Image (cartoon, rainbow, N blue to C red; front, side, top):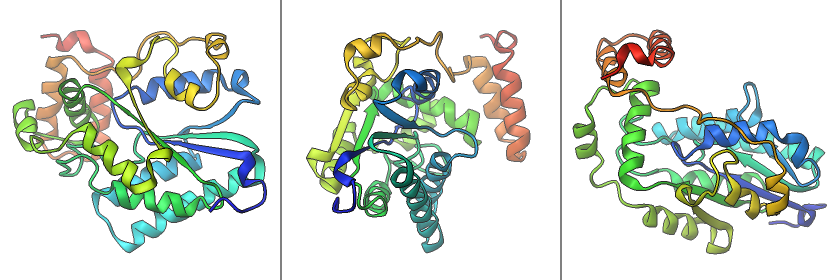
Length: 272
């Protein structure tokens, strides 16, 4: 790998998530500062209609129900993104999508940490040739992460179980250390990096560890425009329980999403 024209002049970093580690805030921050990062890092986030969005969706769908068709779709999405990079970019490219290790626990019956990890990163590694991707993952303290994941699964994925039941279902889901080791085994320790979201120094400028890894200096990061407030915050306990009961009605995804948006926009009505 890495033998094609200009491949050594192009550094490719794939930020694979994971979910509920601040990816939404990061993407807002990166989008807000594309001009400020110009010439340092080309950022590809899951904007509507983008190849990055398609890639993340393909990875998640493959992880939920692996098949040759879904594997081919994942490979095609990665190659499309690779071609865009080779056609237009020199220097560092950062691809960021929270679903690139697959579906989170609570989505579609998933109960362990990223069972399709090795298959997905193997496809990405091969599909981006001649580029040699580096893989970056953020983690979050497990008990806090599970509570947030449970809330997101109810809000976005139609999950119907209580938090107690969710904890029981994911009790044997392994650890972040195991995920770190699996990623390092899959692509090599030199091309795998894991950051803790708790080590981020400033909520107003999220993803600083990732940006420093991409070669952006502390001074350059400090000059970027900050964001205000967190994105995609969890529902109140009352709102979450209301949505969980709604999910049990078997409504279609669009109806559930409309209700979730109604709850999220009127949190005080569901205060508990």
